[in-house]
Structure formats: structure tokens, C-alpha cells
Image (cartoon, rainbow, N blue to C red; front, side):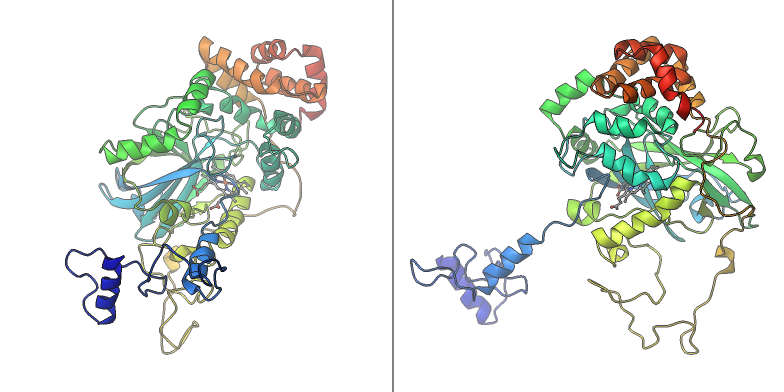
Length: 511
Ligand code: HEM
């Protein structure tokens, strides 16, 4: 107590704040030294606390506002910084400078996540894993917001909020319930492929380091001549891919439910830097119609034999953020954040995402979310966007409009977006080539005996809880249509008659 009062006297006398041997003074948010941080100002020994204790009110009010809304999906996550190195000059494919020269390095921030449950939920649950990449390129940022699985449940953004509602805890009981999400999926034969991969060994990654990443959608590469190719991104873990069985995940969940976060911190802090090799499959727009499926459908993989991956480079993660909230929680990724040379395709799921991410980030973090250091481009940002809450980058010039005779800027014709041919009339209808089952069947067929057994067991564990016989039968019908052996084994495991399964799914087969 004595020491604190002395310090205050020193401060008020204008002497240097850090007298030798003394710790720094604790202060208010506005920088004034605090008399004490241990006792509120009361009206005498028994009286209430006085409202005039400004420092107390400020402290409580500031604490009351510590949380921002968590992400509506992918709330639990962990981020790390790293660097991407290009394997070569890929300018014949894209004018994106990140790929313009062998050995070129681009700094990155990456965030891994689980999808459905809140920010403090276990990392041992069956769930797709988010794998979002931010490249701070010298042409502005590029966000490649991917997942560990190469495909998705649905192919049109209009279905996304309903799907997520069904997967999230019930609005009545606050528990996740297979009755609800399988009810939704029993109307979506297109989800057969994703459900098959999710209930396989890929559905609970052993760690974030031991999983691959995928862009899922088709994007476009555009070169300097304006030539367009459709591309799909994949990044392969150099640590190998490993999943947990349900038994392993249950045990681990009891021991350390945040093992994946722990694993990433530990490895990077010990200098064991994880890395991934980024590649791309390339499709000429003239070949869009040459498959049994629609290449712009996010429920489909592109065949590797027909469209062999081209290795573009490798990224390595080597530094954990200094502060979780400031960097990881406030990080904002959006599929719409692309540099010249990379553009979204017409994929109907991706088109909805282009709106949703920046919209939620303006709500979740605020209008100036892109000014935060983790989100800010490493290039100069030069436009007339201004003001808004928490703005720190307002123009110092009177000319906050463009064009102006006194403050000239120039357009960059080389950054004009590519041109796409259009046809037909506006419409609201499903795509022509749904092909809902073939790739799920091929995935099943490629599994070894153990993988098949675990897939059936995992699916039966959740589907077996479904009370509605029609919902159960439809789902079995979907998996049966994908592969008769798969469906037959599942039917047995969840006690559904195959004839009932076939009859229940028949009206949905062509959907
Ligand atoms: C996060 C919407 C599909 C991967 C989010 C967020 C929203 C969202 C609103 C929260 C963003 C934030 O608060 O910063 C949607 C919609 C989709 C969709 C509307 C479909 C129409 C997908 C797909 C993928 C994906 C297909 C994978 C390719 C992610 C990832 C994150 C995320 C990785 C977390 C990003 C981070 O770490 O901050 N999504 N999503 N989403 N989404 Fe999606």
C-alpha cells in the first residue's frame, strides 16, 4: 500500500513513471494512474458503492462487452501464421502474382475449425473441419475458404440456413438430434456423397495437422490474355491423413476435448512446422458438358485420371498468434476476397457464399473489420471507403471522392473481370445432371473391409436413433442406390426392410 502511494506521488510530481525497481502503475482505460484496483468507492464502511466511481463503472462496462457474436457456423477454431512458396511460374494459367515465379513467397494466416457446435465445444466430434487460407499477396488478399472434405452436402445456397438449423441443437431442447438432421437429409439425395465421406474415417480427423484441405467449389483462373479455366483446389497434408474411430474419439474427448488446438500450438511452438502441398485440377470451359455430372456442382469431385492435379506450391505454418481474440477470433475469411486472376465460378453454392461471409463479418466484427491487422491487406488500400464504427484510417485529404482533378487515381484495365457467355432465361430450377449417387458408390467401393465396416457402424449409430420409419427408409434407399452392398449392410444394421427403403426413396431418385 505504502509503495503504491509513493508511486502515485512520484507520478503526480511529473517524475518518470517507471522509477527504478518499481512495476508500472495500473491505470484506467484512459491512462490515468489508479489509486487502487482492489476497493470500490463506498459511502462509508457499510454504505453502497457510489455511481461516481467512474473507474469501477468503466471496468464493469468494458467487461460486459468482451464478447462479440461467435461465428454462426465454424465457431470453434484455431489459427496460425505461415508462408506459401510457389513451385514455378504459372502465368499461362493465372495472372495471380502469388503463382508468378518459382520460389516466390507469400505470407499467410490459416484458421482451422469445427462447424456445428459453439466456440467451447469438443474437437472430437464427427463434423466437417473448416480449413480457411488467407494469402497476403502483393495484389491484395486472397482467401481460399475450404474444408477438409472435398465436397459438400448441398449444391444450392438457398438450402444452407435450413440445413444448418437441422444440424444445430434443437430450438426446444438445445440438443443436437439425428431425428432432425436426418429428416432434412431424407429430402436431399444430393447429400448422399457427403454423408458417406463424413461417416467414414475422414469424419473425425486425429488433428488439424493430419487432414487435407479442399476448395470444394470450382473457381476460375484467368491469365493475362483473359483466357479462363475452371479449377478445383486441393492441399495435401505432408504429415499424412489420420482419422479417429468413434472409440478413440470418445476416450480422447474425455481426456482432452481441445486436443486439436493443443496439438497445433504444441507442434508449432516446438518448431515442428506442419505443411501442405497445394495443387489444382484444371478444366477447360469447353469441357463443362463432357461428364456424367455437372462440374460446377459442389457435391462432386473431379476425376483425377481425366483432370490430373497440377502442383502449385507448398505452405508451412510456423507461428502462433500472440493473442487469440485479436487475431484468430476476429479473423475474417470470405470466398469473395480474390486478387486479379482468381474468380468465383457460377457454382450456386459458392454464389451464395459470396454474399454471406462479408455480410456476417460486418455484423460480427463491424464495418471496419478489414482494417484489423490480421485482415488488412499487406498492399496499400486506396479508395474512398470511410468512417463507420472504430474507423482509424480516414482520409487526410479533403478529396474523399473520385474522380477529382486534384487527386488522381488510375484504373487497372489488366484487373478487369473475365467475360462469361450467357444464355437462356432466368429460372428457378434444379441443375440438369444431378447424378446424386455414383460418386458415393465409388467412394464405398474403394474402401477396404475395415473402412466399410466402420462406415456402416458410424452411420447406423446415428441413423439407428431416428424414430420416423420413412426418414430411415429413405436414407437407406439413398445409400442402397449408391451401392447395393452398402445399402444392404446398412439396412440390416438399422433394421429397415430393403423393399421399404427402395419404395421410400423412389419418388426422390431423380431430384
Ligand atoms: C464460415 C456461410 C458453405 C467453409 C462461415 C460463416 C458463414 C458461412 C456465415 C461464418 C463466417 C464468419 O463469421 O466469419 C456459408 C454458406 C454456405 C457455406 C451460406 C453455403 C451456401 C461452406 C462451404 C465451405 C465452407 C461449401 C467449404 C468449402 C467455411 C469455413 C468457415 C466458414 C472454413 C470458417 C472460416 C473461418 O475460419 O473464419 N460459413 N458457408 N462453408 N465456412 Fe461457410
